Length: 318
Ligand code: MLT
Image (cartoon, rainbow, N blue to C red; front, side, top):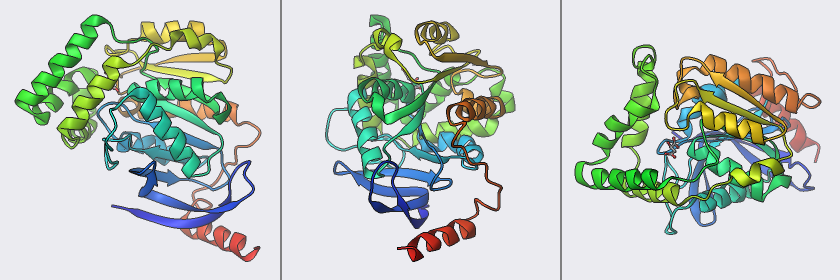
């Protein structure tokens, strides 16, 4: 359900005041595409943008939003063709998804932010940083890789497309979750498994197939890692078989200002399987990145009434 209130804030590094909508499932037009996003947390806090994995949606970050919105302005959005965002008419590609992200930032007048991307979200985040380094303070690469698909992986993607066309998305969802979660998560994280199955089943067949083609055509970015200047946190589930810890180790060795942390009791969806450890790592990392600017708020300071009254003050000061 769409639920938001409006505030008037001064955009960072931009002179103009503009209206900020904050709340859940806000719809905005970006490049003629309806994009759905959630925007929580204080107006003047550093901005964190989370990018979901394939073929999921922004709700995979619910536990991170709940925690981090106390100290940061947190934005999660649905990549085109996923969740509540339109698919548009262009062929999907990681560069197109990256361009959508930059245009969303422009639309929301966000000059600079930190990015956290999981798996496909990590491919997008890495491209966004490489091609727009001036727009980002830091990066979290979670359960992801800088490598391109091998010929075998490309064949697997084509087989997956055939399976979806033959047996449907629900069957594909059932098969996918077997690889996304650690065996113990099937006992300890039943709710998350149901949620992920729903996210996949609710994604349109055509969007899943187009995303599979985009994933298989993506370019490697490993040769760009040594040029990254911002702090990078690399997180990976200890049992991740899709983007295994060895790949994270390789990225860690190639990014000069990076930290690697292996998330216990987790596989590919480490943020959902072990949110406590995952959130602790994020808090610690962003605390370091924003040590001079982070404002710690109490639950009360962050309430809708308190935010409304601070908006009113800004409006009265015009
Ligand atoms: C994802 O979680 O986004 C996908 O597993 C990425 C991939 O298949 O390469």
